[in-house]
Structures are given as structure tokens and as C-alpha cells.
Length: 125
Image (cartoon, rainbow, N blue to C red; front, top):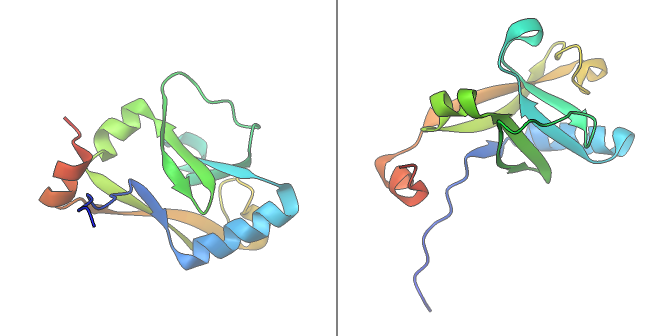
């Protein structure tokens, strides 16, 4: 059996986030995420029906969480590129434009710095 490099994901989610994504997809169909860069809703992962948030040329796809694509602006990604984003859920109101608001829960981004080995695999240079 051939040795293969382990996969290092730039964005992952907790079981609680997966469950909330399931709930939202049952109500709204396929969803997507965009990490807000601040302003009105702070810096939080925003959940939208797929196709209802217009991505720009400067948006970067970091991966998928529970089947939902996850994006952030290139400028913001340059600050976060050495960290793995962990999307979680906590009680409270989400961003006013994010789908989870009526659920009494909100998505939250946690992060951890990649290890030197993970950075080598990602080859961010």
C-alpha cells in the first residue's frame, strides 16, 4: 500500500454545527458560508442559501463544511492562512442576514494555528 500525505483541511466544523447545517438545509435547501469581515455583523461565519450571496473575484474558497462551501475574502484570508478555522455553534442570535438567526443559535469561528508539519503539507508559500 502506498504512503499518502495526510489531508489538512483549512476549515472544519463541530458536530453541533453539522446538526444546525442539517436543520437549515431541511428548511432552505443547499447552503453556503462566507466569513464576515466585520462591520454590521462583526466577524462571524454567515450562512446563506446557495446562490443568494454574490461572491466577488477576491473571495477564496477554503473548503466545505458538512457539504456546504465556505468562503472568505482574500484580504482576510491573508491574516488567517496559518490557522485552521473550526466552525462551532453557541446559543444566541446570529448575524441579522445569516439563516441560523431564528433558531436561537449562532455560528462561531474558533481557530487553531497549524503545526509546522501541517504547514509543510499545505505549502502556503
